[in-house]
Length: 124
Image 1 (cartoon, rainbow, N blue to C red):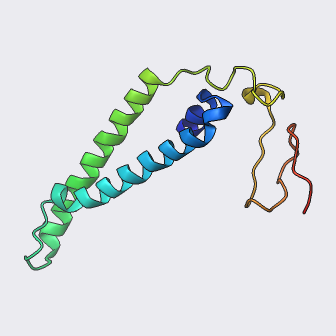
Image 2: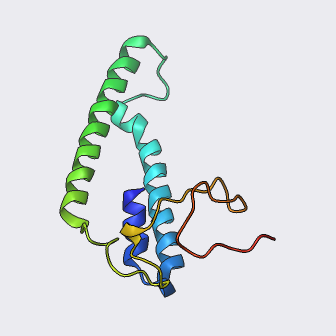
């Protein structure tokens, strides 16, 4: 969620929808590629019978590769994401993003779980 917040905060208000769409498209594509790559990384043969030995070895191989990729992603994020992206002035006239109170919603039509400093929609 921190990467999503940084991406959306770094885009200006006119491009927020495009930034959100690109962020979602990249995330979904990465998920699809990861799921498709699991059998290849595990070296599972689609025609072979499923025995415990090759499945356990494949599972261990996939977990190690996933751990390396997560660590690599953390290093890339540490080096490329600026820590002040959320500290700048807000484009909606409110306080900076890092000074706002936390606000979570259960869904689009639900009331906020915590009071906010931004303007809320009128009830329908």
